[in-house]
Image 1: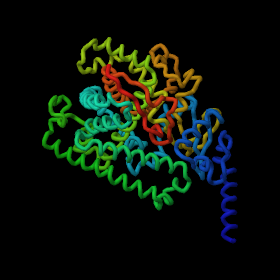
Image 2: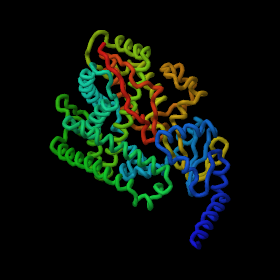
Image 3: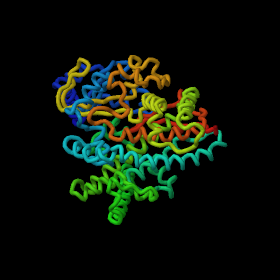
Image 4: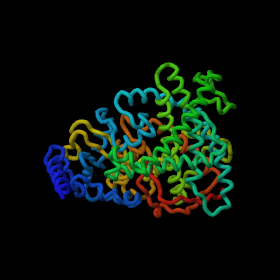
Length: 496
């Protein structure tokens, strides 16, 4: 009985302290769901991931543009207004990341996605040359080759009533990122590797979301004793082992073929002899700029960002095009105007001419942003939406909700590519559309992603017509690292 009294007294004391300390007072002024002593808002989030996604969508509608959330001593503020979002993302004062990114550090270490401060600045400067136009031009050839392989698989699907587009696209994007990031071909055993890698990322994403939403998993000390932690360690052992093996093999190859590191060198015939992002990191290591584990961190980061996000973006885009036959036809007519009746491969110059397709991709990324949520950590008080957010708070930006604001995008559920024509973009708030984040920590690989998406979709639509199987209104989203559908997404391919 004494222990019960002590626990009750402890809870009451902490609750009183939490309520009347400065942070507690400031948090209490921000609208939001009922904040329970100690557990905060975590009780509302102990639900399946598809229901959690729906619940999170209600917060902005119910409480407005600034919504308080949290537990224990953690203050999390959700923001949805582009003015507030600009204030956070545009400033170099707010580039720090804490939770939930700290939960990714077991996998990605302190790579570009998870690091901050001087370490982030050094990594960003180091990696920026890997996405220079001349490097992207070389990556384009890889995209073309992988697209050709994909088209062969699509041809085999024409007789089928439905095709799981997610599996098809995931294989292609994984192969492309393996070549561009690591200079390695994954032709043999790609199905097994893709399935294993895709499942690993999905499982890690599910663990991350569960950690965020569950009080006893949020704390590292208690988390380490759980089955989730054991499962995570097993997954990471496989992923890190794979990456380290590739790095060792590539180092050996570069010692034997040093000319690859010459940016003026380009081997048209030897696919393994093409410059990869990993090569630039190894070159920097040779100059004393980066350690082995730091290389592994950046390769893992690029593998995740370059494969999973692009794969899901393409999956949703192809599904939506199948459901929008008139828009699909407009893209096809644009292809006809560029290529005529020729079946020649696209060039970089052709890709630049695909203006309408680019508008369509942007509209798809508005409705289906792969990275639907980002966060920053503020180390000083900041005014957002008329409220003072205390220092040491997490600012959560829900891109999915921002992109569906009716005041920014009338009829937000409709697919209207013309929203992104030059004349319609002129007066739009610069932070109203942020599928690749924005400001100093924007996505370094956004041109890479757009080039890959335009290459693949243009090639598919030149040869095939898409018919809907999974309708966009039937999609059930789940809360994970990357925007996903709860169920497989199917389309039907028809020869033109």
